[in-house]
Amino acid sequence: CQYIRTLGPKQLILDGRNGINADELKMDCFDMYSQHYYPMNIDNLQKSAQQVEAAGKVFFAGEYGWSKGGGTPLGQFLTGIEQSTTVADCYWSVFPHNDTYGFEMHGDGFSLYYPGNMPGDNQESNIILLRNHAYKMNGLSKTPAYALCG
Image (cartoon, rainbow, N blue to C red; front, side, top):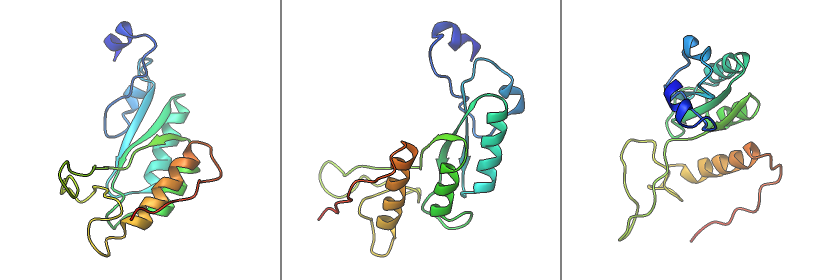
């Protein structure tokens, strides 16, 4: 990261690692640190966010497996992010419609397809949670009306 900093002294540099490395927290060239959550675990997220904040850096929840069971339920995990010092987060992953019809299928079990891929897959309620969370993380207390497609 020190070499990257010489090339772009104003560039934001993310550690690019899954997990917090205590030695890297001491390096001046990293601005932001990340962690992935498979399964979602709010206790681990809050611990990582506090550790990074104590080092004077910012924390980013790089990925989380929002669609599978186990760990902290999605709504609680998102609220925990909002109540922590985490500056940003990304669920894994959103895929667009296919060029011809249907969705671009990924098959890892974590892909987001709106309004859902199969009957009973519960994606619509999760999408609403993720959407409302995005507005809260941007400091907006009022979420605009949610229009359903179809």
